[in-house]
Amino acid sequence: MSARESIEVELKFDVDAGQPAPPLASLVPDGRVGDPHRYELVATYLDTPTHDLAARKITLRRRTGGTDAGWHLKRPAAGTGARRELAVSFDDVPPDGSIPPEIRAAILAIVRNRPLIPVAEITNERTVTVLYDAEGASVAEFCSDRVLSHAHQSHVTKEWAEWEFELTGGDAKLLKPAARLLRGSGARSASSISKLARAIGTEPHVHAPNKLPKRPTGLDLVLYSLATHRDSLIEWDPAVRVNAYDAVHQMRVTARKLRSVLTSFPDVLDPDVTGTLGAELSALGEVLGEARDCEVQLEINAGLLERESDPPADLRAALIDDQLARQERALKSVRFALSTQRYLKLLDDLDDLIANPRPGPDAERSAEKVALAGIEHARKRIRKAERRLDDFEPWTDEWVEQVHRIRKRAKAVRYTADAAKPLRLKDAVKAAAKAAAIQTHLGDFNDTAVNREKLAQIATKPGLSPHALFVLGRLDAREELRGREAVQAYLDAR
Image 1 (tube, one colour):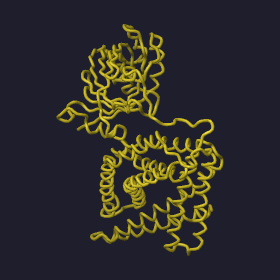
Image 2 (cartoon, rainbow, N blue to C red):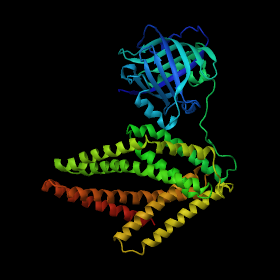
Image 3 (cartoon, one colour):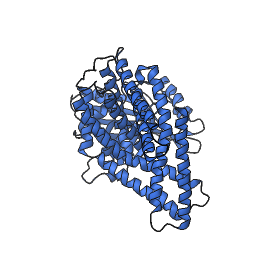
Image 4 (tube, rainbow, N blue to C red):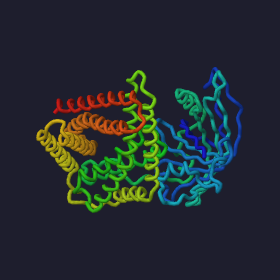
């Protein structure tokens, strides 16, 4: 299968039926405007019975006609008017004509086990006019649409006209003059974000508190935090499946933050529920952790080799090629985990906890008191760990293990304080900043410790040349020094 992803940047307007197209030549004074071409587009839109895709401003359609017939998945993207489109042509769909696996994987975290059914049929008589620059390259398309829709659940039929102006290679600066031109030619702001939203007549929303009340309780704060991180987890899911940059890292952090909310405020929700959920989030974090460790080690190893004028080929293979193979195995495990019923149940359980919480004894306490108590508890644990550090001889195994314990507890302080961000508490901001500094220093030390273990394992591999072993020893010495400097930076800041 061959899926194509692109960023769609467009303007959308309502117009009266039969409104003449505007004079587009002024938008490309050094270029030209192509001849209009007419198409009949017939699209079937699919969603769950409860419109879970529409609730997240996502559309899935199977469309015939035009120059890009096939399956299209459109999702919000960063930037005003921007959407990410994943397209699979009919030449690349499964033999039975079903939803392509690339598209199904991209929405699995949202639809899960719920069926995808036709929710609307939309026929569009589209007239497309292409704008070209002075070199003859396409910079934008103007589309004049006559739309007829039929919503399956409500059996409502609608007709309307709209204009779209989409960049195809031109500068975003073209959008402002295009908007002025279209509005001056009779266009009005679009009444819906998409044709589907207008067809079904409603724009459902994900069940989640989108802001805190004026005087939030502990339960308000916890549910708000859980919903925020739940949404983030779902947003990173499709990026992780295709190994997008930093996606594994961000999804792992999000899983940890979700678990931290449950453990940092243990009396806000029923522990019988949060305990099981916390364990599942921990398991997810472990799977993601293996892939993330590979990313970190690859980055470190590449940096170490860059400092060598002529690194031996067999050492480069051991540090980079072998690590890439390990990373691919780890990513395969991640993709498998994200396709299991266990993972889908975790998402369902998160949804259920947010929609139908089982309050604990601190649920009605003020959010400020709950947050400060959680932060103070986490700070006490790190202070205790730091006092214990002085009981061990520096750089003994016990001392190093205690350093790692401090790092983990600093992370707990940071995540607990981060959950209180919406409250804008000064103590929370200070605690988060101090914990972040500790986490940075000791995180660097942890990276060097893990990498030195890997270097030691590589040194035992048969077949490495004497030159490779010599360079490997030098790399290990550099990592040892970097680790000691990181720990010293932490000790100096205590």
